Length: 388
Image (tube, rainbow, N blue to C red):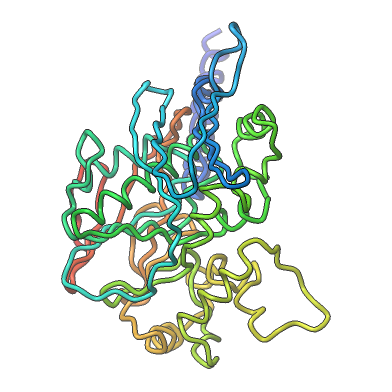
């Protein structure tokens, strides 16, 4: 009997050892275990508002009710030039915020130069709580969601939509912060990523399934949520794909080295990209020269070349010199921590942020990037800084 127990314990030790090694490998390559969903994610009562133009009016739709009492659409009508009072609920903790929306969709400049601090983060992916809590920890906003970053630049490097169940809340919070920052002399820069562009093109394959139901209950197709008649859709259509702020170039994917030899300015890149935000890219029999900037491998919102070990330091620096930038900051490609590549010419900031309605193991922690003068720091979710 003792021999049997000895073999059993040996087998158990080996099994646990192999399982530990396997788990370590999974974590090393970016895998994780999800710990179940909070079904509040699927709550559609008080979802919204979703604002659409109908003729010469804005129509504000908010879903009300519940499965037990039934649902209805609360509808409010506003003149096109009227301020629209928007109130947004986050159902996980029943918190709310409000903002006045105005139909002013001016395209921002592509270059900025001052001596103010920059805080950048990317790939929030529809997780409002992670976004809000990180900004509070980094002292960009206070607990009341009011801007406290002075004349600083908050740079959002794409992919703030899709996957998570809080896309509506994330977008309205960005809109609110744009207004608040401007009042204090600061600036919010929303650089579009490939997932914003996908949504503008009607591609919601990565969206949380809740939004299919939301659109249907509003009597819309899902593509209408960011369509030509949508307030948020028109706002997104005004945004850039790349900007240079205090000498750093911010772009979701990256810049292909071929751009160093092509006659395109940063203004050209943004103009070409914006002109195709609603048109899905596909190979054409007679491609235009600018199609290179729009495809889903080499385009600035999709490029991953900095992470594929096929670039030289000289290529990276030549592209930066072309666009008068001393470094490039990118999201899109996940990494464990905010880090630098190519002798601090590339900053990678796409980390796995916590999920609003799902736990994970190992636990996720938000990070961002702070830049000021010629210094850079990794910003942790508690606001602490690590020099890079």
